[in-house]
Image 1: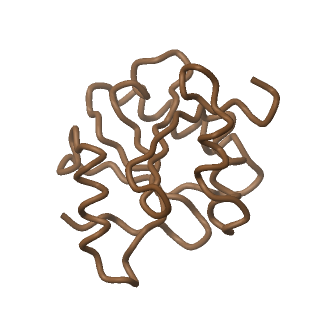
Image 2 (image 1 turned 90 degrees about the vertical axis):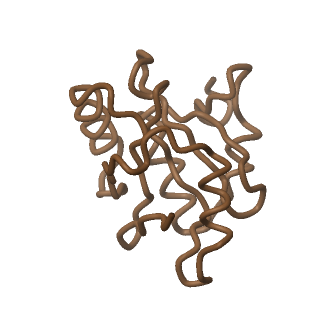
Length: 140
């Protein structure tokens, strides 16, 4: 399995749940509205239906160095059904497989810092609440 590559200066948002087209469209609109600039490459490919975190970690580990990703955001079943539509952020670099949730209103903050390597995903994961969801630093 090859992981899609995000466009320059954007993060990959990979759809893994195909239960609701309306939820996917709502999520995309919320992410697009979360920052001043385009910051997501949306991929809706049914070959990734219900893909596991471990399968993504393994696929990234097997990729050529030029094709490796540091992280990916998943639009999984929880994303599609929960009120806040929180994405599942997956670390593929420092702590492969470590995850945390990110509601769309915080997506731009996380994505922009990861894209420019200003911060790494563990800094956000370490700032999550008891539900493993990131709501900003000290704003939870």
